[in-house]
Image (cartoon, rainbow, N blue to C red; front, side, top):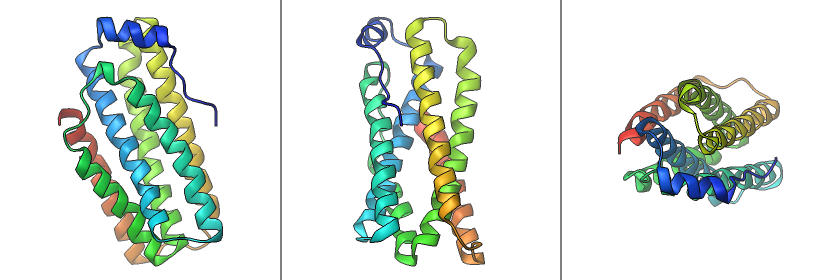
Length: 191
């Protein structure tokens, strides 16, 4: 995974000029999402997994932590979500609960979450690209795209590791997680 960097020159430009309201909302939303993602893997690790699941969670936590650092560097452009404590708790439970059921539940959950996140980043890029006039805004979008590509890798890794079809209960859980992710995006944009 390439290191996500944004040039200090761009951060300084953003600090001075700010960004549009839409950019601000999408940055807040992505920061909240990456915060939740970090806590998903912390939830998995709280179950003290072994072997394949331990490696999977540690590797993916490193990637999500890098994404979060990227968005933290851009906080000169947006106010973080007021709901961050909720996003942390929801993320933790989204990792912890399936990990109690076993690695196949974790892999199915991550596959579903990352499918949603990939589509969400695509939607953000489609909406923001026409508005990106300055190099600093284009640098933000390049970061969004790198995050999206990393999330696609996480999804494909989880999908590859999943060796069974999800049960009805797991499919219901995954549907609930997907619906929760969609609701969280709408809330995080505003709060």
